[in-house]
Length: 386
Image (cartoon, rainbow, N blue to C red; front, side, top):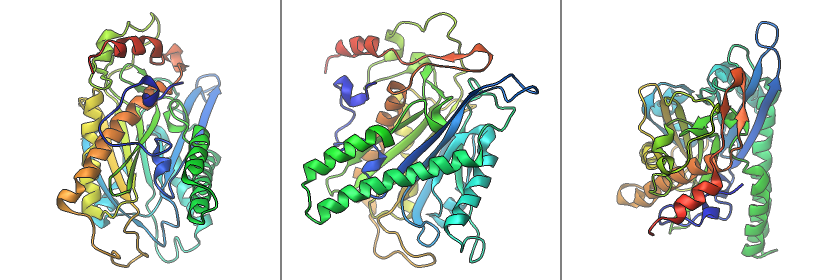
């Protein structure tokens, strides 16, 4: 399945990192656990599950060394635990967990237990408020039963940690001059084919976006100063007629989905998490998070009344021990403009990747969310005047 770059189009002006994903940010890890089962509907069984968990881990021990963070809300018909603490303290002290609306409690509880296992000081020195954000996948997945388990959350967290560890090994080889940069970039790309799984995986398994199957998407941008901005999106919003690809009104030009494919209400949600290794403080992160909405708009989002567009940004460049001040002055003012452009471009591309990478999924009550017709999209984009 193609990604945006495979279609011969370029989003924005800034270059992507070697994997074109959030894994290009040093230390970052991305992991998924997919829950897919078919049982009788409640009360006889748990029904059809098309859901899961996705974890974005900035890396390191976030309890002993939190990272600067900020948040923004475009339309607030959604939930993100820990958002108030991020706005108050300007710090993130846990990885970001993504899941479906009715599974937030399960994931929150599991996150607490798993992070306590890793760091015994949690609950002794201080408590944590895990960051858990959601989109509603009930069009395809049965919400009346708790589908996600502690083991699912553990699997997603473990996968995120493993992907980060692999990337760190490759970069360490370069630092020690054991291999050249090109070989490491190739290794990162090869690993990303597994670690960077997108579309109908993890939290994205049951999502629908802009009239087609959506889910998890990711992209990255490298700034002239060498820092990287990576984005992860959980896409579950919009009308097919508004789908826009690199400025082309593709949704209006593509053939209508086949009869019987079902239709989800256009109101939905999108979670965007930006991560950078740049030296941003909480204020810079909040401003960075707010720009994600511009990227969504470029794909066709209008932030419906019933949608939840919640944006987070985390920065590892000014990380400090818990309770300590920032180690140096942050990037501010006009110096943030490159970061703003990066998050807008990466958000737009991540949304499109979530569509391009997703397969057709059928779920509860006979509902089906069809994949974006890539061959037809190529024809539509081939008629553009670039």
